[in-house]
Picture 1 (cartoon, helix red, strand yellow):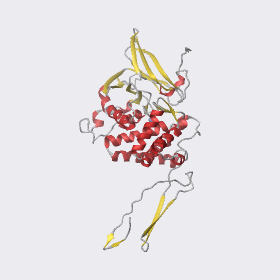
Picture 2 (cartoon, helix red, strand yellow):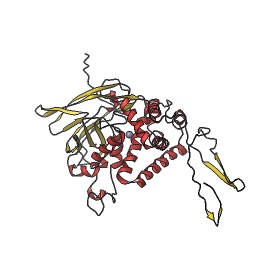
Picture 3 (cartoon, protein in one colour):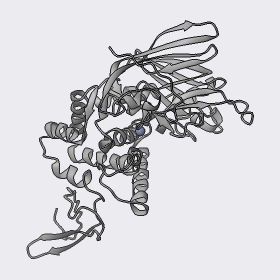
Picture 4 (cartoon, protein in one colour):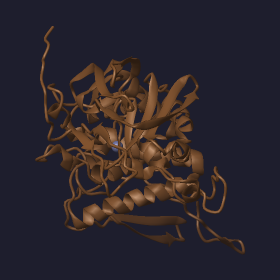
Length: 413
Ligand SMILES: [Zn+2]
């Protein structure tokens, strides 16, 4: 056994929110943000996703504070003016997922089929937690059912913290979110009473659904390197949309995919095109872009359409169970989907994941040959001279509608 004694003034990874006379209701707190490689600024450890280990944090804070971290609370110990909080996660996870937050928090608890869910919010905001987080249990049930993999951790926690510019971070069992997602009943249900499912104005559902999906895609099965980070982020983005379909209907689902397409095309048109999986980056942070999230989610949607929902789900189940508490790359996903579907998919991943760009404009024309009663359909791919894949293989469905005039058929089916 090796013990390392150290002290640090971290320049990254661990952040202090100090009292500020301009913001009198600000609650002083401490929080961490590890992804992508910032946790080694406060813990000396190998800081790369492909190294997994169990973790245990003993955190000493002022008596009025609460400290929350990965896994289960082993004990709290009164140390006079201070309190020791002892948290432990018995299952292995990656360095970037180790986290804690501490401050004057209120906690709201709920039970979800035996899984304890806790929401830690700054003191004074306890009554707002439900507006942001009330769908969490329904999301856990949906993801467990869709993947066939039960929620793989002992509990789930949200911590809402100040000055959190990252939006949300899916640390194992303890998602840290920005406190700006906390809102009151009027913001949620203007002119109505909570809950108001069809009249919601501001919700945290997208953020909550995305981070929760990472507990399966990212935390349970983790990308083996930053080149394959879409395995974390595209799945979280797509599962967020799948949950919206489950909870709010097909239109919401399609609208979310449409927004994902717009976001991707904006980056493609104004900044750059790159393969979803690439090793060409200076800093892993560069990988967290609209190709990884939004284009990745659309590629997963295309895969689901290609294979059918049933095979897609079985493939995801195999991918998750085969690499449980381990790491995976895109080839592992391809193999799992190939095994359940019986279809080779190398062509799919080559053109959509390992190449830049996207399917071109499809041009078509048709003519009818009455003598032979044949419809002639011409289809061409009309991409320009950009960096797209040369000729896409695109399974398409065609519908031919015909009309009967008198007794003469103008078309055939
Ligand atoms: Zn994410």
